[in-house]
Image 1 (cartoon, one colour):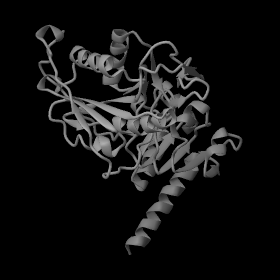
Image 2 (tube, rainbow, N blue to C red; image 1 turned 135 degrees about the vertical axis):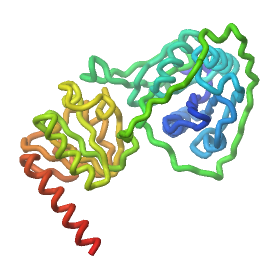
Image 3 (cartoon, one colour; image 1 turned 60 degrees about the vertical axis):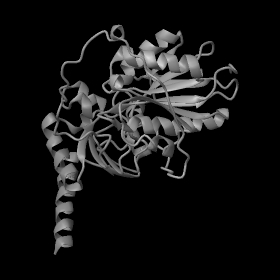
Image 4 (cartoon, rainbow, N blue to C red; image 1 turned 45 degrees about the vertical axis):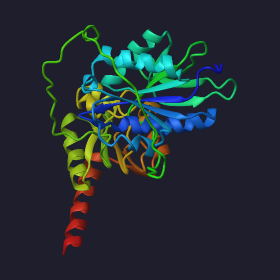
Length: 337
């Protein structure tokens, strides 16, 4: 139920190493849709120190940018960030507040919700406005991803949700949009810091994030063995892509969790998604159905994945994939001659 004293859709803008993170731009896109349905405005809330390209938040949909620029906020710490955002909520009274379901968002949002006595729905994959009473309908996987639950927060404000990276889409960048930055003062006291950061050690990996890839060759339990994923790697290499997997392949230990696609994994939108030995369960489809072009390879012609594929190949992937790799090599050689 609408509460007139609470207005506008707020987005917490995550920054790392002074760079605005992509998930925040995605949330601004969704915030624009929600604000349009509510006839409200979009506000981006940024905490940091000398963050780069702050104005691009306006270019991606923010009507107002609330910017707390202070050296005490350069590196994320739970309590200082919670203190500043609590003051923002108490002063501005947002109707909706969105966070990325990242390591920072999952730490910050529940602490903040508890501080301002409101609810929080975590790991949302869909956000809509109820036509009946204009409450925020927050949908997320439940029971291990086997059902989808829609949750509302009718009695408290702001309505808060964390949203998985890659689920929402950025709007087109518009540099003609006005940039309205409202700076807020920060007063972080020594007692506001419950711990001290001595050193930051960033994990380095050679593996590209599957959410950044334009081509994904994804394997399921139908690949047969972990050794057969080498076939997928060969195909991905020829296409300039990387390998991902379904939950089934992760559960049996064939692939790491970081490359899992689906409701309980990551949401991806590559230009090309090749599903190999994947049945097409709804939990997996939710993570890749927005791909531009989907190719399915499966020996079971009744597999659900074919209903969502732009191109389906029925047969043994251990024969089909090597043949595809050879054809790609021939095509490349002919092009270079």
